[in-house]
Length: 251
Length: 377
Image (cartoon, rainbow over all chains, first blue to last red; front, side):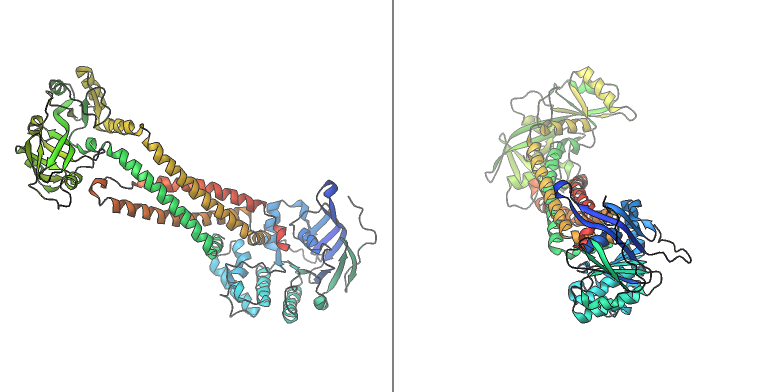
């Protein structure tokens, strides 16, 4: 599947969640985790979803990434409802349009930094030599030009996260989803990683959504959605809209 | 993507090594047992296949294999010669008798007496001496295994003597005859000499060896010979097949098959289980690959490449080991019939690949069920 074509002049949001509900389990074991979430992630913006632990921020980004399906409501990414895509289509959609940064980096221990960064290109069928060349160039720009052949265990946390960032950026996705990218880093490394993400978000055709509860990095956000008890309870930042006071009724 | 899979596999050296060793040992065990079984079965027909001049064997009707020596009426030879489609026919006399050497070694031997003028039935290949020397009275050829049994510790040489029924036979050649199934020393001599040692038996023909005329179907000739002589006539291939079937149906192959099956099941189980553990331990990495857009098809090929590499390396090591052991054992004169046929090597590797492939498919189903969202936890 090709990347989503850009419509000239269109500035519709990269991500729009409308009345999204999610529950796990059935019957007495049923647990409602998302309760009418309204969320928008705009292009060219670094949007934060913040909130206390256990407020299911990660569930929300799993829905946005198409890794989970909403129980009710609509999750649209670049104007497409994730529910309309089959599992295979979602996989290909992610391959071409999404980049991911994880709290625990999730680098493959067997691969070098360059090989890890090249994974999305290899998945997309780019020849190995070309993929590694591009990965090397990108890592060089991220300050890891001398660590291309290092394995994850030989890298510091900050360096590993930069490799993960390179993996998220290398195929030039239009949406980057980050799950607690600074949680395992010291302040300096966290600042460094967030600077790089903020730079990536400057691109007018790219949106970056960051889930975090690290208050030290809030100043990087263009918009902050505060989440609690399965809902977006407040918004901050220019251009961001407030959630509707009356969320969609539960299904 | 397959390349990434191989890097991941190589990275986990303990499991990678364990799986290769499991495959190698399973292949070795299966090939070793299968080689012994196939070699034993082939040895049941080795004296039949050694006679390359003739393509038809005529025996008493109830003879199932070469070692069931049962004389036929001597007159039958003329009837066979007179049958349409038979180019020529020669007698072969087989006697199982006791032989002893000057050193006091005593052993039952298989003595084959070939027709004096044509020498049809003599081994074609010789290790020492000239086969035609048996035209001379009271001379024999002996096979290497027989020589080492009757003259232990002595280097192969000519001129040794063997006593059978108070007659002294001189060894004039060491043949390269295929090792007999019975393991008895195999002596070849002229039919005249052999007949004089055939004490208590008037008939001096055990088998009639014949050749069909060119252009005539040997099976049709067999049918006509059987009809005219009321004996059993078979092609060389047919007689060899009957001999192998006769011994094969005695139950011994079952014992080998049990060991082969154990090798197959244990090898595949260890490999499959270790592969499953490898997949489970890499579940997070595989989930991450799914998140970044790797399809199930790509993951399937990746796992196939991993399994393929393990099977290839394990099979090479196991086959090499089995072939080396066979080669080592073959140095023993009595075990020189043991070898590892190519079809046995291919069959064992393929069967292990199929069974292990089943285990890999089960592992792949785990990967299919793997929830990609788990990578966020």
